[in-house]
Length: 194
Length: 288
Image 1: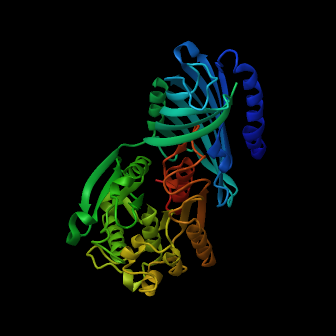
Image 2 (image 1 turned 45 degrees about the horizontal axis):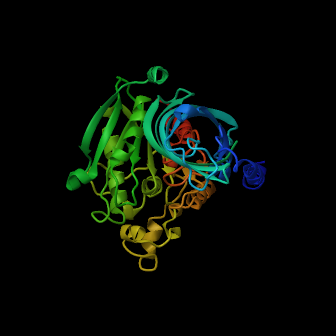
Image 3 (image 1 turned 120 degrees about the vertical axis):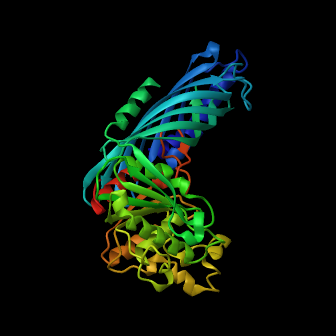
């Protein structure tokens, strides 16, 4: 499934993008208001993280995105864990002038941005030796993000990012109390603008 | 923000405050190099379990503060918890570090009454080089080369061991100055020292239960170190559990963290690790 998605991302979508761009690039500049993307490193492990972004307040260069993720962790040892997460982010796009693309309109969702995001993730851990659920955790994160969106063929976007988060973890089995700490993160998404 | 504040209040319910005893020197001969911080639950209970944290840093760097958050989290849950320093390379080499850790453990237990702790319910935990040192304490308590000569008492094994990204077979480590400076020579120069510093060769039927935690993408310490240690422990009939973190590196978790990013944390800082560690402690040294 993940291979199929990846194949689609790197072959079919660029072809579609190229066809559409050829028709439109000679007329009016594109102001694409939506983007669907994958967090590429999540495919390298047993997980999947996808994001949908909408240029809701294009006039003010503000976009809103929603993220959903799932991962299966700790498979090789005596435990297995499942995590489900979701999040939302508000981004401000500075210049809106992407490199590598001439057809996008000024003010597009491209180039540098800063944002703020909220995430929540639930993790459940199973003891495979004793065949029992041993507990889990609920994690909340508030993050400041910044990144740069490269756009290729006017449609394909690649967005590396950095973030600083304040994350609070609570133990759902009540063995441990809450734990708040600051973490650094980095991301790398590839997606399709439409 | 208000939601998170509410969450914090909810999280704090049932947790106790923590009393801190800082800079407790456990071996006067080496002063601040051999000091510990102790974190006590703020209640009058006695017979509590204890956890001693030993930091990593390639045996030559870092400080006990890297585990302060971990110790406080456990103390809030009712464990007596401590973080220790030990002599680092070049001040301490070879078995000096292990002897210091044994002294710290003996000192921790010797003060069990003052801490409201049961000396027979003490686990040790460490990461990276700290993971190696806790593994040494779990296996070499009866080895002449690592017997401590401090006043706190003889070496005694801990009641449980949590080793994150630990080195268990020093002979399998790639040649590097980090390793040779610590051991005191290369594998070809001092092979017998590499044997002594390999916990995997020191296991016997008295070895305490182990929890091994390792990331599958750890480029500093190969996950085979923990996998081989688990297999060797099980051969001797010792309880040895292993938690692997998919995509977990030595200091990052790639593609496997909250939201849309990869986070700079070690494998023992993941929600999975804390869930498994708290369950392991409850099963081995008992709940607070």
